[in-house]
Length: 174
Image 1: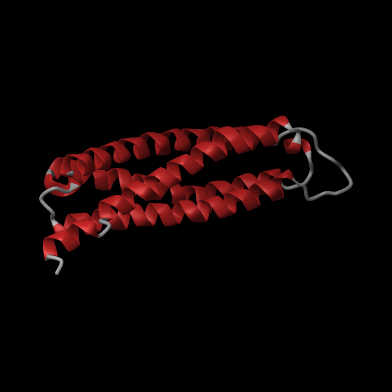
Image 2: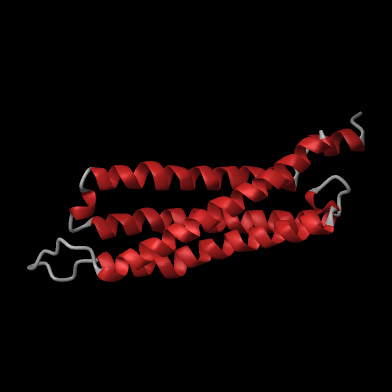
């Protein structure tokens, strides 16, 4: 017969779910930002008239995945806080507040990407007049790219800090 203590140690914890979601989200962001988009830019796809549509499709899908990861991370940290496990991230009040603040910031960035930035960037890049091809980037696009990279830097920093805190707590438990 398996004891309750053995059964609980075999079950995946919320902390594990948070770590997996953070790792998946951050690695996906790095691949998208530093592999997929530069290769699309280098191949000349940004000069094609249908690039805005293709970019919107890619980012629409990825933004939904980001929302799911952000919601899972925030939910996981709130569940850990509710359980008050003495070995969890929430043991320290300061770590708890920082972890929740970082997860809320990550979720907010995903919301901004999904409902503000991606639709605006796609609308600026969309070519509505088929008879006059445009070769220059709209002026507002550079500002939106700057905002995107600023938010991306904040996301990677906050995600890295949160991953570090959760990972250290998980390792100290073992």
